Length: 488
Image (cartoon, rainbow, N blue to C red; front, side):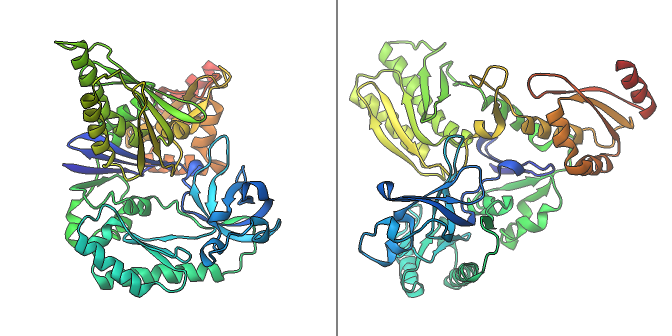
């Protein structure tokens, strides 16, 4: 059973995919950390570096974006190699699109070869090639799509057919192509007065779920915000509307399906496997490192059997952890030592099969002599830990604590579980950062929340070194005000 859960009642938007009850994919979008991959900006070149054949572009973020000479349209329209100083100059305005998210150490990577993504294909004004998703394995279908591409593209244009294209008619594909092409031409003709600025945002949560094909195989789609129905149905054929179901349970949607517990586990270093073995996941500035340990598992016959069984179980779980934690870049997996080549091949075969389930491409570079598997996974968004956790001010950044924003959203979900309660007020103690986030700008978010929940929310500051909150009391307004006054 393939189930998609969409939790969008709060400002934080979340989606989870369950396969027969097991969490296999997770998407989280926070207002302050909305993914920018795919977004198009009007930027200004601030530095051109001939030695790097790259430029740095101000797109309005904290760190300037990195633009390689290979990602300029001139590299498509000419076979000659240009020095970047002949293509760009400081102060120049140009449209760029984010290819790779930045992180706490460096800015995002951008391209001036813009792409316009639909549900079935990608229109590329400067692509200069026709490509079909590798997941379309039917040679006849692939050939027909390429032939259609040859008829559609002109000059330097290009097209990439996504997996969903195999299910669409020629007329539907032509219609989508023309719509994306028109959007591309319209954007590039626009005169942007404010530079830097975002001119096309890619942070529409439901659209991103559709583009990542999370609706396609879902046998049931549960959502907890009734306003989403119209938006979701845009991406579903009419005969599939029956899979949609509005969740009305008192308990939060993710709590009801034990997803909150899973998210907590995903923020821990240790991952326990079924057989008693475990993984230890650590992150450095340059890479993720995963250590495989036998733990409580001792096997029955030999060290070889123990090592193989533990490694096979790890090979099944690690790709799932890569997806759920959104790990990217260089990933090193330290398997338990295997001497036999046949055992190594069995483990590599399992992990390769599991990696195919991932919508993000991962390349296997093979095992080293020390049984360390080298992977590289494409970065599209920040990791889950970067999204949900802050550097701990108490320990000087050597550890991590749950972020104030994540806790504020957790508190908001908890409040929704008390909607229409008998008492007419709730007293919450929280650190100032959580109180500020819950109130929103000018206190408007708190006012809207109280109106929707049908009870008053009283907030008092808690002096703690790290973000924290707890519900102190529920009761009548008079009782709460009296108790609050006595506590001061």
